[in-house]
Length: 228
Image (cartoon, rainbow, N blue to C red; front, side):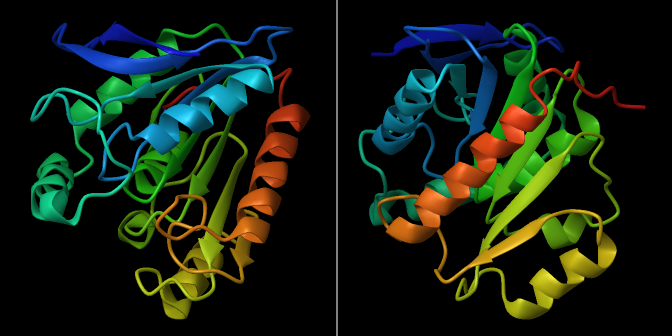
């Protein structure tokens, strides 16, 4: 259903690949999906297709293209874990990643929404605070959010976390809630990656998607936030 397109960085003109899926019926808005360390996987491409069916023109930018080009052939590959984790650590969620996210946002007509998983969940958290042109954000199990609790989302934002996620233990969940009591933080009876094939939990995936779509629908007439 989707296609590979190129999006150009606004910082230095670097062109990176993105998976694009477009609605076949009425358009509700644009959506940027930020991937986990595994990159633009088959699962995320299928997910983008499904959001397109819900009316969202969807882009999944390849955030590691400065290190390694090409989409992932598998949803997970233990043999590549060290390499992929190294890519994520090398970014440090610096300007290269957020610039790519901003370029993807700018490539879509508003309203533009954003969601992300794991590495992408932390990216989503930072995008909600630093990027412009967003209308609402949903972050899924962002393991390093606690490193950036001083950041404040500038648009409506919700967090989806797993109760038994060893990468985000209960003290981290409480720290997030204490730092941002105004934000909805949903905790599901699941572990890490409960939307992805390697940790899939059907009820949690279904409910979190419903809540995400409800967030988008409630804010669909917004004009997006502006970073200071």
